[in-house]
Amino acid sequence: MSKKIAAGQASATFEEAMAELEELVARMEAGELPLEASVAAYQRGSELVKHCAAQLERVERQVKLLEGDMLKPFATDLDESEE
Image 1: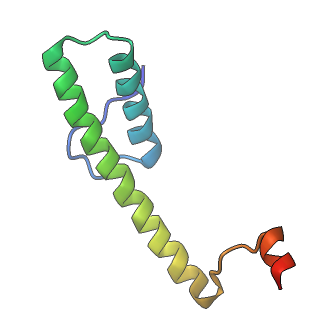
Image 2: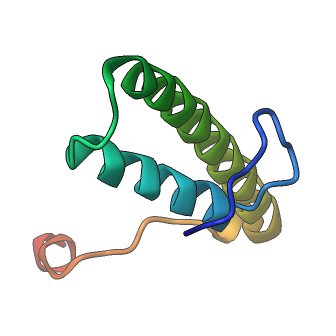
């Protein structure tokens, strides 16, 4: 079983939060939880999704800063053939 992250723990890694989220989803999909626990699991899952999204946004900003003006979309074969 994965390590549970304390609610509001800012130092949880993206991978830890995703592992907990996957575990919650699996338990909910398997129907293992009573109604009250399902609601609590849904709320916790929502918190984990927000945590992961914030970490992804932070990393995206870091990449843009590191790449500067060099960050451009990849050209596809279709794009190149149109030119």
